[in-house]
Image (tube, rainbow, N blue to C red):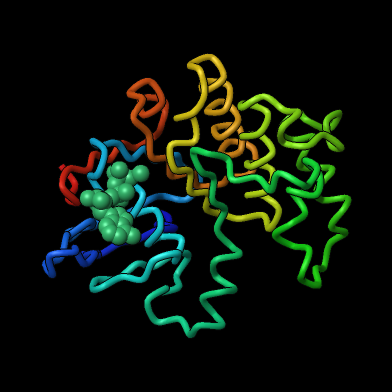
Amino acid sequence: MTDPIVRITEARKAFPLPDGSRLAAVDGVSLEAEPGTAVSLTGPSGSGKSTLLHLIGAIERLDSGSIVVAGQDIGKLSRKALAGYRRTVGFVFQRFHLLPALTALDNVLAPVLPFRTAFDKQERARELLKVVGLDDRAAALPSQLSGGQQQRVAIARALVNEPRLLLADEPTGNLDSRTGTAIMDLLLTLRDERGTTVMVATHDPGIAERCDAALHLRDGRLR
Ligand SMILES: Nc1ncnc2c1ncn2[C@@H]1O[C@H](COP(=O)(O)OP(=O)(O)O)[C@@H](O)[C@H]1O
Ligand SMILES: [Mg+2]
C-alpha cells in the first residue's frame, strides 16, 4: 500500500450564525485519498462539500481534527508555510473565476507572476494551454471563450505549479452535459498522465461514477 496523499481525521469546521449559534459545516469527517486517484464528493447543497475542499486546500482553517497532505499536517504549518502549501494545490471552481481583463495565457500565468520560478513561466503557460487543447486561443479574453473553454483555462491555471492534488468544486456545474463530460475527461487524463490526485465535488452522478472512489456527504458527515 502506498501512503495516502490526503489523510483526514475527525475534521470539524463550524461557522457562526447570526443568532449566535454555530453551524457545523464539516462535522467529524475522516477519509483517505490514494495518490493518483480521482475521488468524487457528492451530497445535497449545503452538505459541506465546498467547506471540505476549502479545508483541504487550506483556504479555511480547521476547528479541530487533522488534515495531512503528502505527509504535511497542514494544521501545524506556520502562516508562511501555509502560503507555500496553498501554491502546491490546484483549485478549480464552478464559476471559473478567470480575470476578465487578462488573456487566456495571462490567466494561466497569473498565479506564478509575482514569484521567482525555476521554470520559464511563459513556456509553462503555453504548454498547459496545449494540454487543455487551447493553444490556439492564448490571446483570447475570457469573454471571447465558451464556458467549456473558460473552464479549460481555469484548469490550466490550476496546473501551473504542477500540483499533486487538484481540488475541483463542481467544475461542470455551469456547463451543459456534453461539455461537462469533456471537462471530466480532461481531469481523468491528468490523473492518468500526470498522476494528479483529483478530488471533485459534484451533483452529477454520472461524473461521480467515473471516479475511483466515491464519498457522500450529508449534513457535514460522510454517509
Ligand atoms: N463562510 C461561511 N459562513 C457561514 N456559513 C457557511 C460559510 N460557508 C459555508 N457555510 C454553511 O456551511 C454549510 C455547508 O456549506 P458548503 O460547504 O458550501 O456546502 P456544499 O458545497 O455542499 O453546498 C451550509 O449550511 C453553508 O450555508
Ligand atoms: Mg459547494
